[in-house]
Amino acid sequence: MGDARVRGSKKIVFFFPAFASSEATAPLGILAVSTPLLMAGYKVVLIDSTITPNLKQRVLEEVKDALCLGISLVTGPMIRETAEIGRAVKAWDKNFPIILGGWHPSLLALQTLEAEFVDIVVRGQGEAAMLEVVQRLENGDSLVGVEGAGFKQDGKLILNPPRPLQKLAEMPVKAYELADFDAYERLCGRRWAMYTSSLACPFNCSYCTNAGVYGRQWNGLPAEQVVDETFDLSVRYRLDMLWIVDDNFLVDLERALKIAEGLVRVGSRFRWSIQATTNLTARLSKDELRLLGRAGLHQICQGVDSASPKILKLMNKTFQDFDSIYQSAERCLDAGIRPSFNIIFGYPGEGSLERRQTIQFIMDVCRRFPGAEFWTNIFTPYPGSPIMNHVKELGIVVPDSFEGWADYFPRYTVLPWLKGRSHRRVQVMRDYLRIAFDRIPIAKLDAGTAIRAFQHSLSYPARWRLDHDFYALPFELWLNRKIKRFVSIAKPKVDAKQLEPAVGANCP
Image (cartoon, rainbow, N blue to C red; front, side, top):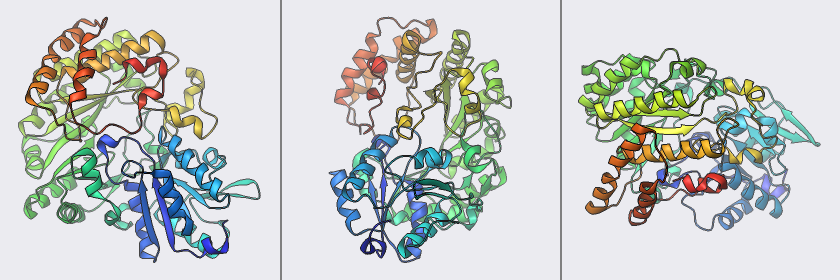
């Protein structure tokens, strides 16, 4: 692949396609695979679509003297920009190697390789595999035998055996020095970063792709290493927040509390957020939550997903106890920690009754515990999740090409059993949930007192509508859209309204 000049280059270009610029920060996957390359003497250039002007021109300039282009992405709209950049590079040099990695290529490697502009895929943990691929490209060697890689050869698609998962403690520290935190701060108004302290989750929720990549093999960094690394990151890059992206941070409760004790001991000043299942969060006592709060923990995101026992059983989430959710919400707020709950509407088997159960639960929690917040999605059947084994019987048509997955978007999916008027009704319902109770995004809001007061006044009719299941003539949503013109906040570069014109009028 490529000519002799390119093959001898020590420069690697990474491109990160846009997703949501309102919460922009450095792409963790690219920072991870960059470290072994930097240690081996390669030069790494990171181009992030959310902060890079004249994007296509910049990519084409950087690849001129590079060895290859790497792109990291997940299923959904990021594919659209990936295809645009990939075709532009191939129009410049059809032999220039383009490598795709991340969740989507890991789960659908062969279909991804079928794309005309894709030469190589890296599956699963990419640190060691990417380094070996790059070294083979530099030397002009075949990619046969590179574990975790797939490639094209003589018109054939070849997938090498998967690379065994490494423990997180054996992985190199991510190359945060590549991130332009000043640019991200200019965009979303906050200096923050993502950090991984553990991988995988021992549970197997039917909608989750985690097992498809990590096989439910949970492993975490030692508490001391987490303390040292996060404290250093916050000081070195003047970060005021870290989003710890572990699938389930509280699997090892003793470790979690040791991390908190360590952060208190070193005098950390940054805030941090975690994700955890509701049953594990419920184990925390008041004193333990207060310790986590003193250490800077300010938010625990929990996947409630539904308030219907029927739907939870279908989701393989019978471990969820609603009494403990109320209890943990109360304890979190007492400790100064925001309980944040995720909901999935439209799961197979959900009808109006089950949806009302969930709405009533949301309303009850938010009224009893002001400060609790809910974020909602519409069910999206992702590759790698257990429920994907049943998509045919559910009437879901799975895309038959890499680019066909570009319209998969977790908040706006149209489903065979949720479309047309019923889909629009759910979208309006979700819009009212957004304004009924305060939610705090990562991006800073710049709104005056009068605007905030007006937006707050809309919460009262929104709550009435949700209580009475009445969404006709949604004039409050129209008013809210008008008032948002006076609120300064970074806008998503990927506009979900473009994905489904039929429901675009009801999308925020």
